[in-house]
Image (cartoon, rainbow, N blue to C red; front, side, top):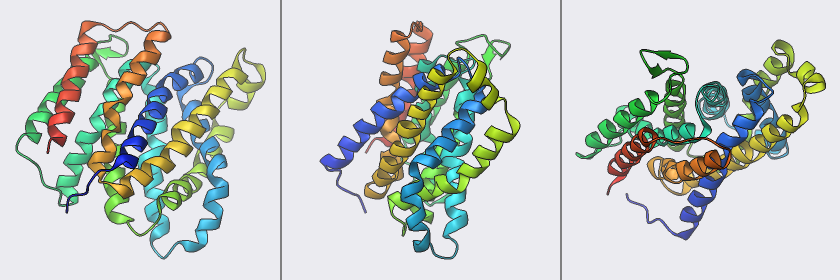
Length: 292
């Protein structure tokens, strides 16, 4: 049954786009001092702390089988993408990372069709081909970490988008009975200890925070990223998934590239015609995939 999209989902979509579009520049600022695994682990750990007051009272509402589903949701939607995006941005501009993130709706559609009985439309295949071509074009746009000119770091974001698409369908169809607040807060609570153990036990984070120039400023940027881009954004995002459909919620990536590109340009990043062409191919493909 089709849902009528009212004003509230549209507002939430724009709000999310602004928050997540800003996330890429915040990751970039954190990477000026900390290693990518430290940025990812700190982001998840801080998000757990922010959401703990919401998560703890909701543990009593969980039923048998909810725990592992929320843990898996946290891994797919938060934990692994946090590390993948931070690693990718060591060799990709934040604006390009934001553009590549528009592949999330396509993965949402593909995985929904393969595993959750969601149906393709005829022109959706054309959209998949266009967006894949745009991703390849962006992957060829930088030489760092390259094999024959292909920037392998771009595919880390492609992998993160796949996980986002999987989590969207998982939340909508496998944990429909739980509230959006429970899903967002408890899933982070379950994965947060893994990130904290890794951060304090296996990285040089504490030493850098004490000794490295600019460390506290970078720490502040990552905490802001954790609060806005992970804790708050996931609360809003899961609410949007509950109100609409996984595919509609994933189209937050329509507006995100614009925000990410604006921040990138402000920070001195240079976009070429190849970047713009790749961006247009991806967005055109996503539009076709979502076309009614």
